[in-house]
Length: 161
Image (cartoon, rainbow, N blue to C red):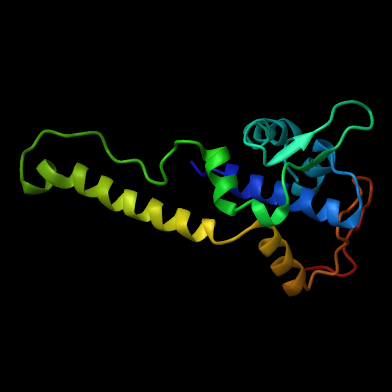
């Protein structure tokens, strides 16, 4: 089963950062619309992001979502660790009876490789901030889309992708 928590949370945080830069309001309904995601999934992801100070939200009719700290102080690693928590990138198989050299050693070997891969991934994510990612998205954008679409807008992009 594919796990969409990190890419969805990343898009959420980038959308909130873009809304702030554009002087627009961001809500869970706006995020759900922009991501074409279930609003309950968005709210579920908001819990760890809020807990870890990545976003803050205010309640009520005029409530909104904002970054919890400046975009240049939030790394993609912060977002990943927040929403994935302690789930490993790759799960190892359970221990199996030692019947040969492979079955006797495959579990510890795979765990070592998975740990190395996870450390490398986290190192890459730690090098990039939300500010960096947002700037790269804007610089490389060819979509013709508005910065932050309104939920009722039928065609937020000027040209099709």
